[in-house]
Amino acid sequence: LVTDIPATTGVSFGTEVVCYEGPRPVLGIHRLVFLLFQQLGRQTVYAPGWRQNFSTRDFAELYNLGLPVAAVYFNCQRETGTGGRRM
Image (tube, rainbow, N blue to C red):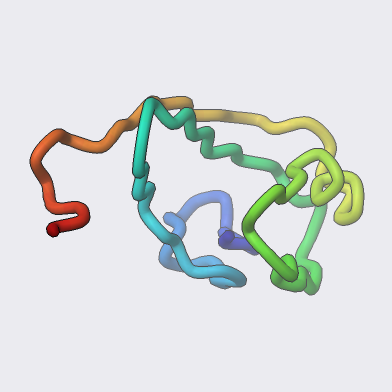
């Protein structure tokens, strides 16, 4: 979760609130979405207490973010034979 990214720069110029963790699917296909919101101005954003069951809708409402201005959607799944439990 990165906030306060200046419009003419990249994400590295923003404020990292929560570090990125890549997907680690265990079983089946997982659907992931990255959303981009436009902030009305700089604001203090606090890290959510947990990642599981995070509500983007509630988060956007809490910080008055409105609707997303961009989104990226992708599927991922675990490759067969890439580790796992060994007996």
